[in-house]
Length: 178
Length: 264
Image (cartoon, rainbow over all chains, first blue to last red; front, side, top):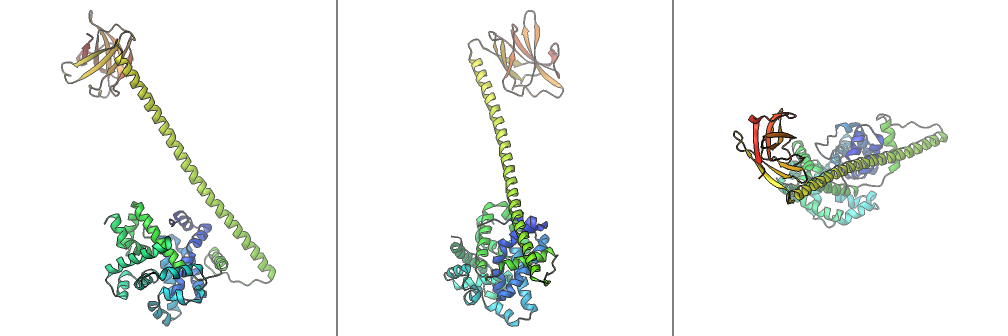
C-alpha cells in the first residue's frame, strides 16, 4: 500500500518532466489494464495509453486534489479516451459488447494476457469471487458507469449496489493485499 | 456519519472509482484530510483497484511507448515521426536518447535524494530545536526546584520566624506573609494575597523599627512569584508593604499602606 505521491504530482503540474516520468511509471500499468479491457486490442491500447499520458501532462494543471484522487482523475481520462476511440472508429459491435463483456471474459479469452504474471494472479483471485461481484466491479470500476446507471444496468437498488460493491471489494482486497 | 460508518458505507470505493457526484467527492476529500483512518482506508482501496487493473494490462514495448511519450511532450504535443536519413542518424539519436535517459535518471535520482535529504535536514533541525527548548525547560524546572528546596530549608530553620502582614484599613482583604531569619539576614516574602499592582505602580517592602518608627526600604517587590528572597541586614521589628509610583519611593506613602505585620 502506498500513499498518493503528492509532491511528484505537484512537480509534474509545475512542468517537471522527471516527475512526470515517475508518475507514468507508477500508474501506466493499471491505466493500460483499464484501457485494454475496453478496447481489447493491444496495439490500440498502447496508442490510447500514450494519448492518455499526453493529456495528463497537458492538463495536469486542471487536476484538483480537492475533488478526488489523482488515480481517479487519470482513470476517468483513460475510460473516456477508450470509449471515445470506440465511438470515433464506429466500432458499433465493440460498443455494444462493452456492456455485455466483463473484465473476466477479457482476462480469460485474451491471448495478450495469457503469459502475464499479474493476469495469472488475478485469474486465481477472481475464481474465488462471487459472479455478482465480477459484474459489479466491472460496471463500477472498469466501465465507470454513473452510480444510478450502474444500478439500472445491474437491476438492483442503488443502496444495495453500494454495499455489495464494498463487500466484493473487501473480498478481493483480502486476497490481493494479504 | 462517523468514521466507521463512512468506511463501511461503500462510498470510499465509489470515491476512488470516480462515480460519486462532485459535491460528495469534495466532502470525502475533507474527511480524508481529517482522519488518518479514512486516509489509510482510501489508500488500501486504491491499491486494490490498481492491482486489479494491472492484471488486465497486456505486455507492451515499454521503452518505445515511453520514448514516444517523452518526445511528444517535449515537442509540445506534436508527434515526432520524421524519418532519419541514414543509420548513423539513428545511431546518433539512439546515443542521444540513451544519454538523455541516463541524465534524466541521474537527475531524477539526485533530485529525489536531495529532496529526501532536505526533508530529513528539516526534521533534524526541528528535533534539535525541540530538544533545546526541552533542555531549557528542564533547566528552568531544576532551578525552580532548587529555589523551593532552599526556601523550604530556610522556613524550617529554627531561627526563621513567620510574620503575618495583615490588611490595613481600606485594604482589609489583602495579606502577605514574611519569613525572616535575623541570623542569616534574609527575608522571604509571599505576596500572593495582594492584588496585582496597577499600571505605573509598584509594591514596596519596608523594614520597620518601632521606637522610633523608622522605615528602611527593602526594595520594590513584584507579586508574581509566591516566594521572593530578599537580603535583609536590618534590625527589622516589623514589615510593611505600600503601593508606590513605579520604581519605588525614598519614603513610604502611608495612605497606601496595604499590609503591616510585627515580629513577635
